Amino acid sequence: SDHYAVVGNPIAHSLSPHIHCAFAEQTGEDLLYSKLLAPLDAFAECARTFFTEGGCGLNITLPFKLEALDLADQLTDRAAAAGAVNTLLCQEDGRLLGDNTDGAGLVADLCRNLGWGIRDKRVLLIGAGGAARGALLPLLAEQPAHLHLANRTAIKAEQLADDFSRYGDLSGGGLQGLRSRFDLVINATAASLDNTLPTLPEQLFTAGGKAYDMVYAAGPTPFVHWARTQGVPASDGLGMLVGQAAESFYLWRGVYPQVAPVLTQLRRELG
Ligand code: ATR
Image (cartoon, rainbow, N blue to C red):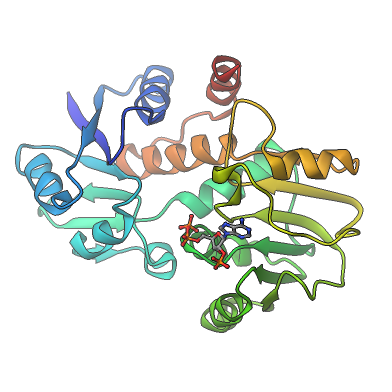
């Protein structure tokens, strides 16, 4: 059967094999999906060997998404905009297509699983690193009323907003000067990974506002907890993880799997 894998360092705790095997079972696709631990200095070699030996596609996780961009022979628009590749597909002619499905996974989780439509909404994206950049094009494609980028280091958010200004109505700035309210606030900082919370003002949400953390955990992340204590519905990023996997699966197999049952099962297993 066709062989796929996720490559990263570390890789032991990746949920991707579990998710893709569930998709394969559900859709009746005949495939094998494994984990590859690449040495920190040998991502390209490891990926090339995988494809030389007949591998069909790779997911790429930390810290190799930038190197995967360099390895790709061709890029989708969303991968080029993200400046990072999380999915590689070996095409008929052997050329590697690089895609980035993270932002699409986020949008799918927001709009389809949670029912939090983005169109005409005021959206705040916190952070200006790789995670924020990867989300921008798919978010702007949903045509929010306005998208504001806020980052601890204001200049990075201003720069990033500048880079994407031709794709929609967006602005950038620091976390301190935030004065307006938003319908949707998305945390794309690495703060939850350190179990901390970005310093945020009170009164950030409109009535009916929602909060989303791209990070996921067994329990509520600090950002999810912070939102819920204000009575704001909040979700972590587990659905984004399953969503990006579904987008990769679709790129590879041409079949779009059902996300909801896999998400429900994963949530139960996370405890
Ligand atoms: P990633 O690829 O996950 O986005 P990154 O490129 O290192 O990682 O970016 C991390 C982001 O999280 C940045 O926006 C960073 O803010 P700075 O640009 O000011 O460094 C943000 N971040 C990390 N820890 C944070 C914290 N405790 N509070 C607020 N922002 C934080």
